Length: 308
Image (cartoon, rainbow, N blue to C red; front, side, top):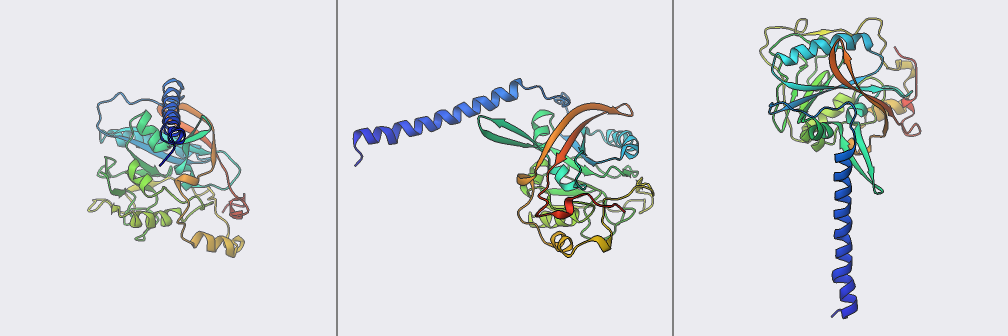
């Protein structure tokens, strides 16, 4: 049996202090959310039931972006879809990392604790997005039957299906244009961060979709084919961030082929340098300038190299 003094400390004081800390931190977070000015983000005032966030990993593709934004804005509006375009611009000196850019989150530091808001979740809270599409800047949809409407929970819609994509045609391909809810993206822990340079991050994400028991759907029965469903605007002079075969080390090849069961949303390392609201060909977009961080000892192939 506890003595009265010990019982008072154990039964009342410690639980009381714990409750006070929780309430205080909750108030601080609420107060921070209420007062801070989020430059470049818009709260949705529309009556749409769903809102789409178009996430565009980006680096040095201004000509493509100038054509992409107005084209896709018109395409999505024709389907009566409320939307917000987020250009995720990698501004560091490391090799391009498409997956990490999509994983980028807003970090809030409050009372020595850190709160994380993934881009999708931040938007869902601030501007009403409840689903997202990961979209290559050089792939323009042409067939109006390609759907950008809400896919539903538990469903991943691969809009750039292999049978219609102008370049890639294999069953596990989920690149180009991929749509799912923000809830489902979090459920499967986002994308792996270890794919520096071009390629393979989509193949690994296919396994996460499968293991997360999400339903992968693709367009079927279109009247168009691989040459007329999309327009690929990746110019012949544009160099990909890809090492030559002779330059790839056995370590890089082995690491990229190894399944990543740990990396994802929770360990994306980055710094948001600038947020801005601007227009591309008179169409409003938000640009996040992002410096990614890399453990060059673990992933030496993240360092700059020649592009081919």
